Image (cartoon, rainbow, N blue to C red):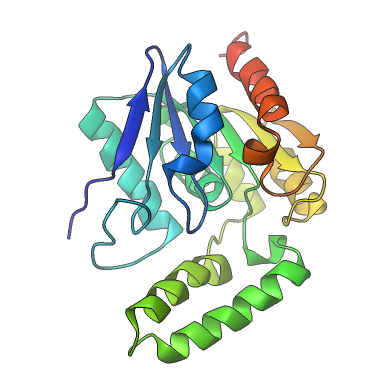
Length: 230
């Protein structure tokens, strides 16, 4: 089943795509939409099986979400955009920028990871347990099936090797919280593996875009406005 991604759009200018995290929807970026739509055409998307976008059938994976994004951009007539992804949205953005480097001008990866090992054990172990429990009841309960799929994204996805990041051609900002659920060393590895990437840590946890919106928007805004290397 082909799906149509639900999205909201605000502002005018060069397009900025916002991709939310696992189990969320476009509303996570309420502060970014308000700020960046002053100078940009902002499109905040609900990914497959999230928010108001239908699940459809077939695989429920980061790679498929990246393909959904390609179709979405084609439908919108957007040949190139800036992409900001948070958590699983960052993973989608990362995979998309690798597969379609010609489509991304600037890339912002917030709390992304290359593989499940990049998540701190104190966070990942309960996720693995929850996924196993939900999977036991998935055949009998739609709620359990949805939980198993969402948690499964964090247990099995993504699967990106550091050397694969050489495919990314976009100017890149890697940003995370000082107390992020993603290991600091893993975030540093991502930045180190992308040519010319800028790395910033902001005081806070995984949800700095929402909880520390002013600081987050300032850093991202400066990065997006500095086009001297484009």
